[in-house]
Image (cartoon, rainbow, N blue to C red; front, side, top):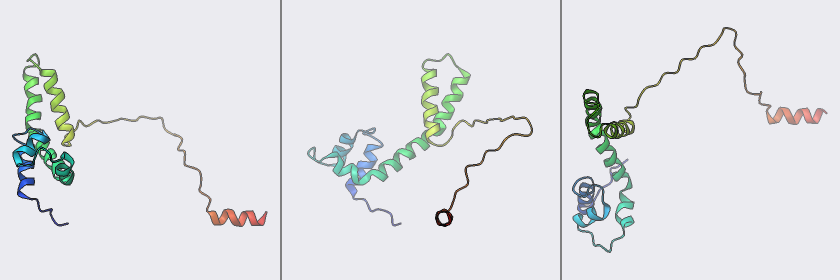
Length: 133
């Protein structure tokens, strides 16, 4: 699929949105030179995929910071805001795919019971059975 060609204004808007404007759409629009009368959906609607891609990149770029923040809390668990730091770091890591791995161990006695779903009757077989009766 061909990459979408963005205008200079759209590029500036995206850069501002993820930088100086810190996610504030109206501020990013002003920085890019859009009129205050321009509707948000006119600008952001056509850039939905680019906005999501950049937000994903922000999370990915901050994953190391999140991981190091958790390690820092391990070194000083009584530090101010430690609980909030771990919570925020966990959210960033979860959203970047670095999730806590859980293992489930299933133990059972020998000779268990295995239940299968009911056998599906083909429509043709059912119709011919109806004709015979």
